[in-house]
Amino acid sequence: MKFFIVLCLAGAALLGACSNHQQPATAASDTPARADSGATRNAFFPVADYLEAEIRSVDSAPLAKKMFTVRNGHTDSVFLELPEFNQLAFQFVPRELADSEFEKNFTETSFEDKATRSITFTYSPIGANTELQRVDVLTVPGTRSMEVKSVYLEKLRKSGDSVILQKMFWRAQRNFSIATLVHVKGIQAGEDQIRVVWDDSPEEE
Image (cartoon, rainbow, N blue to C red; front, side, top):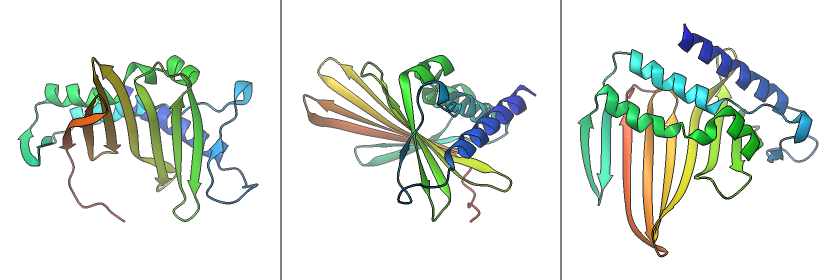
């Protein structure tokens, strides 16, 4: 029941966000628009609630979860137990996505593709003191309303002389991937990639 409520809340917020952003164009088509600020600013899409609901959905389903690791051009694969899956998946829900922090410390822009009718909501930090550097939520027309197709996050942190960049991609109801790039004094020292799949069935067009 709680999972259903979270999905309803996320869906309602997405519908509200989409309806608020699908205004008649006053300029050239397919151009990004800055969301209103202050009292008139639209509520952000509940990214954390959505991703947590996705994770719980995978947890509750009897699905095999397989991880592919790419390192130095070599690929390994292994099946994940539920605790291992959750440890990786919850990296997509950093503290910066908490409602109070998210709306206070990030700004929103939106982009509508007239050809595909998809809408991308992009969230960027206001200040520099945050690991979370970017969030993209891609929505596409669904059977009854707009649906989330993917969520993309970028994280950046420093550790000594190293700068660590993570590019994280969540494909709704299917898989996620995390690419970790390490730069030491401006020189790329290494890159690791993991991809976790729980639904590899062909997608419907």
